[in-house]
Figure (tube, rainbow, N blue to C red):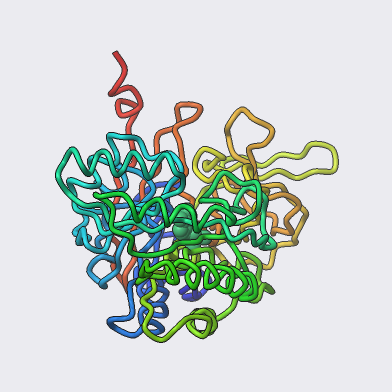
Length: 410
Ligand SMILES: *Cc1c(COP(=O)(O)O)cnc(C)c1O
């Protein structure tokens, strides 16, 4: 959705410079039509009545973005009571909310049951006991899937691998059958599906297919025991093009490969997050100062690691580009923030034009795990967020104030 109008970089039909003038910097900017386009790819690939697309709302839980997706018919994949609350508030129907996480508290389980969510993705035997007990107390039945760890090791950052042996996630593969047999005996549990989520930013179909094949083996064995598995939940994890030359599998190819593994009567749940909002978001920031230290050139921006932590946390690469076309000479530069940590950088060793002080940069692919992971570290107020649709801009989160920093302190 990026394009140039004369020399100015635009998102949809709006110049970034106009967004900076109107809303200040730094600011998160999202393209509404890019989000819609990304979601529709999933929706088109899954026939109606064959299941649902549950947006992984931990990637971006802004009310307006959730509302946009719920209006398009999305379900929600949640990881906490707080996320369930946000999703209900944004009009997701409870019957399309699924809930994963290794550490659901008793209060969260109770809240989820009272909210009548569709299904729990259960990650341990003790969690199953807890859900059964709380459901009994509330006189309701809890619909569950087990999240199974299929022991597939996708080629991605170790912090975002989840389906490998030895991670904290899911039920170990060899315990899957006994988990289902135990659940079958629980009076307040309805077994409804099976779940796996092997990791994030995965750029090949093969690990997804391998996980599906391993899950299929469990399904066959479980069904031999008279337990019906209606839903196959394949999780999320499809990557996006952070670097220009990265190849990303097509959603429809990924999904048809998975469909081909299972029987025709199965229903599916997919939980995409990053691939819906990641490439639709930008962090717009201003160069406050420039300086040199030895051979190094630094561009010091008003966005830091508290606003976008992915470079620091995962060594993640985000493309950074000026918002004005220029013929200025390019020099190798580090783009760094104002936070008092040497790990506070947005990009290192980038060939960037020599920019005047006060010029702006856009950090691309910042729509997922960007604002959602931001904090007020160094007492820096949370950023404003702006949604762009065609030639219109909408403020979807106000910039926090200094007072907001201290509201809950006593
Ligand atoms: C994080 C997460 C997702 C979304 O992963 P993406 O890589 O953002 O698509 C889906 N399901 C579960 C259980 C998750 O924890």
